[in-house]
Length: 140
Image (cartoon, rainbow, N blue to C red; front, side, top):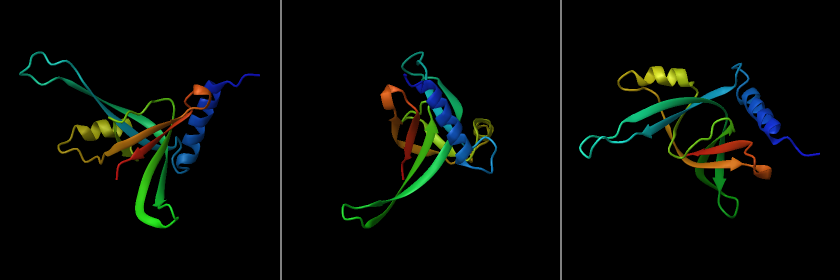
């Protein structure tokens, strides 16, 4: 019998929301800030930009790196695991611990108090060619 990978992806999404943070009923929130540049009307005018804030539920993990001999090297990598409902892009920014609505409200203040992280790497976990989750590695 063939595996229903879409159903497995939905289970992974629900599992991430349930184990991400038990103190919050919908899981541990984060927001992807995505800026899309439009067309410039001419060469003197900058292109228009549209910013969208996408709420995701994550599992936040910090790993300490070791060298080839197993010795800790003093570097930590922060990785977020997120379900496949939204595909993160390396050009997105991530704020952890807030929702899209909160980030959108904060963006209207000057200066925006939200601390965004740069995405260093996005790794899909895709057995059988179907993405079940993404690992987002944040830049130090």
